[in-house]
Length: 210
Picture 1 (cartoon, rainbow, N blue to C red):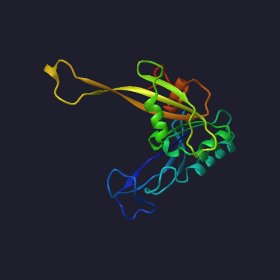
Picture 2 (spheres, helix red, strand yellow):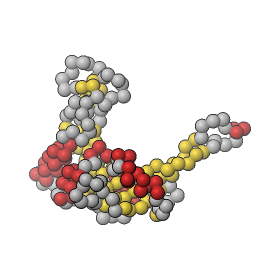
Picture 3 (cartoon, rainbow, N blue to C red):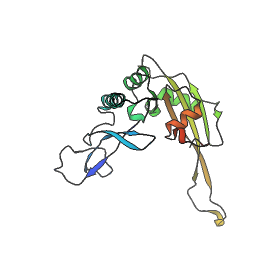
C-alpha cells in the first residue's frame, strides 16, 4: 500500500469540512485527504477525509493500522508492504510497521536533522549503481528514537541547463549537481532493489533506478 495526501480545492466557502491551509492558491479552502492505494493495481483502497489545514501525518497511523487490519480481515494472503513519504517519518509509525511484520520504506526528511545532513555532506566514499545513481548505508537514527532501522542514502547526478546566453547556438551549457534521497526501511534487499521499491516501481522496475 502507498499512503499519500492530496489537496482537493474548492471555491465555495460554505463547503462542510474544508479549511484554508496547504494550498497553492492563498486563502482558498480545501480538503486534505489521505489515500491508501494498492500499488500493483492503482486502486484506491480507502480514504481518510481531512480538512485542508492539517499536517499530512494527522490521523495517519490509526488510518494505516485500520487499512492493514481490513486487508487481513478480508482474507489477504501475501507480503504486506507500505511506502510512505517524509511526512509520515516517525518512530511510532516505523516501529508499528516493523513489529507487525510489514515491510516498508519511508523517506527521511534529512533537512530536519542537521547531524544527518552533515554526515551526507562529509561523505567521501559512495558506491556506484550506474552513471546517475550512487549510495551508502549508514548507522543512523534520530537521537530521541529508542531503536534505529536500516538507513540508505542515495545520490543522483542531475543535469540542468545553465542559465545565460548560448554560445553561437552550437550547444546548450549543462550544469551538474547532486540530489539526495534518504530512505529508512526494514527490507533486506539490495540498495538497488530498495530504491526501485521506494520509487514506486517494485517488480515492474527495469534496469534503471530512476
